[in-house]
Length: 291
Length: 312
Image 1 (cartoon, helix red, strand yellow):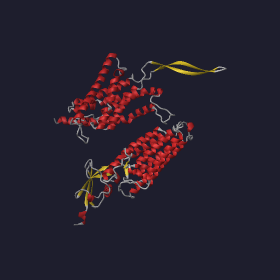
Image 2 (cartoon, rainbow over the protein chains, first blue to last red):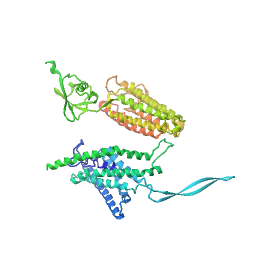
Image 3 (cartoon, helix red, strand yellow):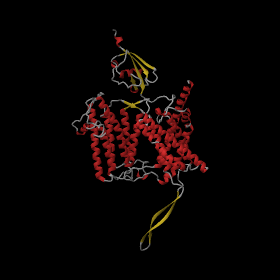
Image 4 (cartoon, rainbow over the protein chains, first blue to last red):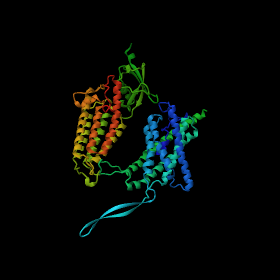
């Protein structure tokens, strides 16, 4: 959902609404783009983001070559992934101040779902695979005929932390999907802003999603699913009754609701993209005929 | 001049496709848009008047039902553009449904109907006074709203789009269930400052309920039955209406106050969240109302803010 949502044509990032070329139907009422200062800023923003995701792509490839396997590659790109994906929150601001003519609500939804997956699932459900030792004080009452003794024993509790999510292959699935999608998307916006969009980039943006979107969604869902046992066991981010504010929250149930929400949302976004593809790529074809 | 030649002609085109949908000749020049809508329904019965939007320009504003054909800037044949507003439902129906739900739902939780809490709690009663008080307040609030819908409010629009009823009911019913679940829970924790807190909160609640009702009555008296006139509301002899001096929509101000009171009384976070969401929505409405007052009336009192005195 987060993967394709970011590819969704309805979200622009500058350059006349991220819609460049004669092929785009102007459904926006105002044709004026951002001013020159805003355009310069957006070009820099999109170039930086393109570079960032390229760094992640290169990092993945290098880690794969070094390790010889595709397992647990997440750790090698964890920091740039967090940095650049979280940085995308700026895009909400861009819409809010109007330098990008996209809906604040839609953009927020898209970026937040990505940020949620990165921080509230992948980052949070972590215990690296080591045995953690916890010393617990255990109080015992010992009854003898004359006196009750209170004893304190120290026990060492071994926690085999096998419940983690970061080394799951599903994480790699969505990271790859996001990385390819974002490199194309940000370069699309960059070129659009500079009014010089190569057809290849436009084609890639409106075609590769066909595979990348389901791939990303699968990775995301599998990752959330893998996180569930840990969340249940650790009571992660959950509050139970009774408490002073008469409130409770079950993060486990919440994650399940999130997974269920993919069912109505994914097809809608996917078919919207298919529809956009037909509209935008065929329009360009027609224009090419007249050249 | 023959009498016939004084009659107007109206053609109605689809706003999107420009397709000619209807041609009416022999239309009285004094005919109102409402009458034209009725005539249009005769040829297209699936589009009853409430779901018709007729305008002079395909992208322009809808014409009002009271507008007279003769007074419009049209030639001998008036061209009107039609847009289907979708299935409509009356405001009264929507209000009654969306308010009856919370009233009923809250009571299900209050009486601890089976399958909500554990079986050992079925049909038990809370031992906290504040829980009983909360039920009374919540129920009173929604009964008041239902009665106001039936006997007090005068609606300027008859209908709203059908999908609104689903949206609105989900909001009201959902939040009612969420709040009621915690307040009536066997593990409910009463307010930290005890009876003092409850008394203060109850006072706020009652005052705001009276205030809200006073405003509704004042607004009703502003508009005679059946008319759609708009006037600036002013304070009356009732002290609760003196808030009009500072605020355009004191009914919303009092409404937020009521819910804040209820939140303090129950010390329940979901109630606070409900108040916050309601406040956000009412602020948007108040700002809109305030803006249209300013646009319509040159002499609108400058001291007034939309919803919070001096602030918002």
